[in-house]
Amino acid sequence: MGNTENKDFLLGRIRGKLPLSLGQQVRLTLLLCGPAILAQLASILLQFIDASMVGSLGAGPAASIGLVSTTTWIFGGFAMAASQGFSVQVAHLIGSNDFMGARKVLRQGLTSVTLFSLLLVLAGLSIADALPRWLGGSPDITREASAYFRTYILFLPAMQLGFFGSSMLQCSGNMKLPSLLNVLMCVLDVIFNFLLIFPTREIAGITVPGAGMGVKGAALGTGLAELITAGLMLWFLLVRSKELAVIHERGVSYRPTRVCLKNAFGITGPMWVQNMIMRGAHIASTVIVAPLGPVAIAANSFAITAEGFVYMPGYGMGDAATTLVGQSLGAGRRELVRSFTRITMALGIGMMGVLAVVMWLIAPQLMGVLSVDPDVVALGAKVLRIEAFAELGYAASIVAYGACVGAGDTLVPSGLNLGSMWLVRIIPAIFLTPVYGLTGYWIAMCIELNVRGLLFIWRVSGKQWLKHRIAET
Image (cartoon, rainbow, N blue to C red; front, side, top):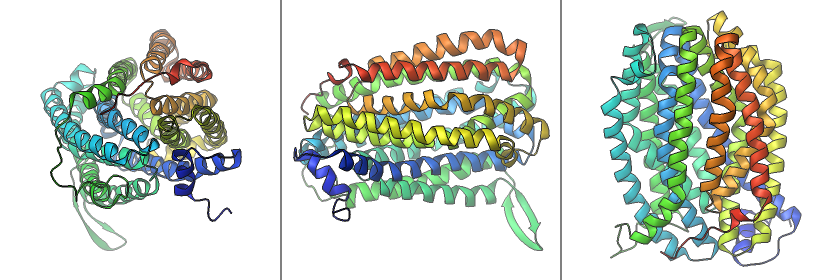
């Protein structure tokens, strides 16, 4: 039986309103979350590779990337949320077996997110020169920080289309392909960074060519990897996907309709506000940490990157929860929505709990991969061990938020994220950081993530989050 109960068979039982045992639900969750976790691992590895390669250049170049990293998250968050506004609609339509309607939303979404990404490019370029100064960076790192940010922004349309292709394939139940392509992106990033960051040099008696671009080379290498991956992602989505391929359709429109845009904005709008204010809080954290100097900035940035290995299962499980909840709700099966929410949260909390213990044990080794500066390594390891005590609460919030997105419920969850971030993290950090240094900031972060987890457990335990309605497109 196990061999016949593959992903498509089990998803078909959701859409066909056929019963699913608890074992089948767990199996389907694991089938979906496995590739999703792999995709998250590839994303974290990409950040890890960038950070470690630049970190080998010293604390200054590392600090220049760390200074603008929170702002790049803002722009990336806008791009990701724009894609989800359309992919959640597609998940609901697929759940109700309306594949024609799903392809219609996909076409409209492709046009919308492409135009949106171009607006983001213009906005980013307009602030690239002044941004590092606004963030309180010292004069010795502002030039490289601006160069990194400008290059990042120029490749943002590729990132946007990659997010769009990945989220569409995932909402259709195809988790494997986006995961494999994200692994490919990681490999390409290594190759491009190796050639672009460092100058031509001798390695084991062999002359290895290099552009010697430093920090700018890191952004360019990542951008080229994203560009190639986005092209492949869209090709598979538009040409090969059995549920969503639109390339052979004739006489169809790619012009967004008012209803589709309204649906998308109802999902994406709160996520944009959350992204702007949440990332604004991250920028505030950068401003709080920046006066501590380049070592603290680099340790903070590298520790956040290293922590990604712990929370990648949570985000992978959150992606699975979005797909499972979206298709179950589209099929009108609320009992499955609640069951899948419980299953994904339990698995996410368990996985992140185990990895938190591992992170506590090998924190110095993790930081040692990212930096050659002993002060950066020591400080980063210290704050990572503080953060290990936050991972269970963080897991609950990540997976529950993914379930809420799948239900189209983004307004209240965004409010929970915002209130927790600003009231429980940033305000205490303003007082703790000057007294205890970077340790004080991470203590505030640890407390806040546990509070946020409790808030999201409360949210999905109720009924209000399942009352969102998506209009017919």
